[in-house]
Length: 162
Image 1 (cartoon, one colour):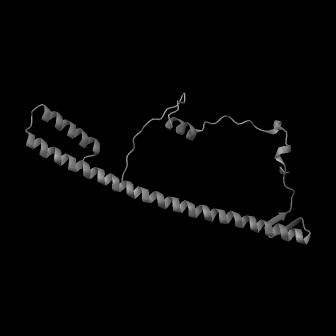
Image 2 (cartoon, helix red, strand yellow; image 1 turned 30 degrees about the vertical axis):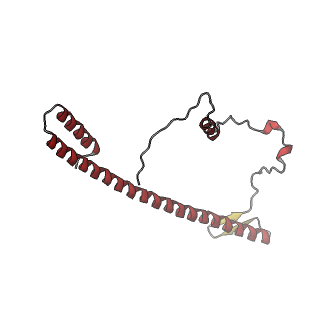
Image 3 (tube, helix red, strand yellow; image 1 turned 60 degrees about the horizontal axis):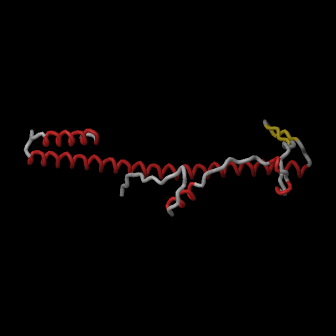
């Protein structure tokens, strides 16, 4: 079976030969019908392949979600185990313990910033943010007939497969 590019090229060549009067109309029609059937079959096969790939993608998404949940559960378990050891050492009044091949100890963390009232913080500590275009508002303005300099609505095309 030929690929779509070859089939389209064959159809163009057939049309050129017919327009030049080199083949009769019935031979042109029969050959064109055969090429179109082969082209439709090729497109159908590509659509079937696409459907299989879409199913694979859904499977990948499900597996990613499953593994993400397992990773999060493992991370939470690590936190709970560490908190369990921390509370056990704290309750016993110990700062350090040798446990087989491990040494566990309670150490001070790096100081963490806690913001308790953002309105009291001077503006010098704020980071300026760059302006950001509101694409949705621009689109709605143009749709409603307003002129927005530097912007326009463009109509594109895409393939719809059902």
